[in-house]
Length: 118
Image (cartoon, rainbow, N blue to C red; front, side, top):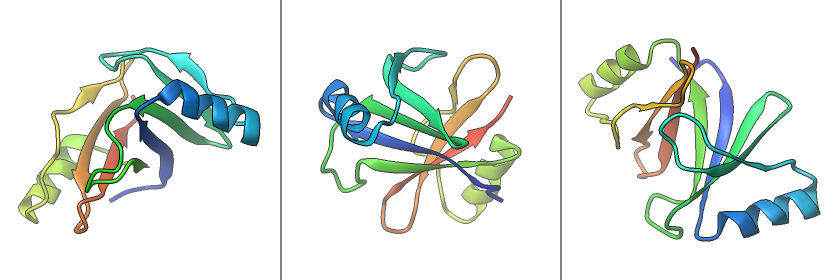
């Protein structure tokens, strides 16, 4: 069971341009970071929610905004989802220092990120 919304991930062709837009227009303090096995990306935390902008294709059937939800036990959650015919879109990604993520799709094909804290 998801416990709460913990992040919003945006995919962009030019993440540095998008990060600058959100910094200058909305005051969201994106900074360039790299950790774990993820490539460098723009991120920040704001009022307990993690925001990230990563390089990738946009305008796809899966959309370019991904909500991220905290789960207690990622493997168990994925097993339960698998028993319902819901499968992960990629292998579990280690973020470094313990946290891990994986992504599934909702019935419309939109990505939903699952986050397990350290």
